[in-house]
Image (tube, rainbow, N blue to C red):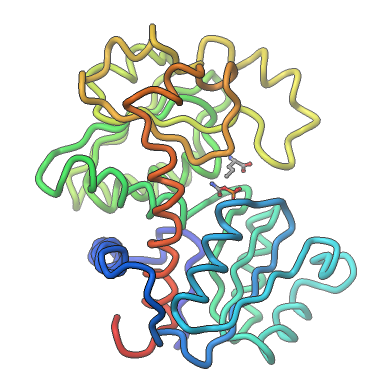
Length: 308
Ligand code: CP
Ligand code: NVA
């Protein structure tokens, strides 16, 4: 039976911990080429632009001894030139795995339902699981295994926020989220996380006050106010998110050894001030690097031969 990764709900807490451990192992072994994906072909089916997800996946597959190919939005034109089901069935005749970046999450689900190839969600409007796994690895590297970490996410209750909620629930971190009213994360996803959090001891708190959310935080996390596909809402969102910028005033309430995280791309002067993202506590490029190590671990876990 193939395993897909559409959201972190697809992995048990033990499997999340295992993927993080594997990523650390692969990271420590350097960039040497292995055979974990020997004879495997991975396609990147992207409907939106990407820097980190695309490049980290391509290099990950190469370092694991497999073959990777990029399928640009205009090439496949998912659901328009051809139905999602036909794309899934056709590509499964060539590929072992499809990393899909879509607008609607239902497209990723439909791909998974119709493909014999393994489907990995490389970002949909609802989730960004590969990002959240890289984020957990980054936090672990900074604070170790023992600390009961308090993360604070300030901004939009979006795809990155949803995956962070599930990741924190799975790993047992506490998470404070502050969004403007009407931009809170999905209640369904919160309910899903609550069930997991009860097992792992994680506490997820939803607030509308950034100062309250940042109090005593070890990690302060932000993402864009306007996600890909929301460009028409640009003006309204910038108005609605006023007061939710992470800047030196806001972080005064955090722990002195706090780290600043952002999935990138970032907009200095909008969701974060330049002095914070470019300051000594920022780990955003460690996060970006860890996308590659985690991608290798995810691919090895789902598809790899030998080391698992
Ligand atoms: N963080 C992230 O997914 O970046 P890209 O959109 O550049 O892939
Ligand atoms: N929330 C952002 C994340 C980009 C990596 C978006 O979906 O555009």
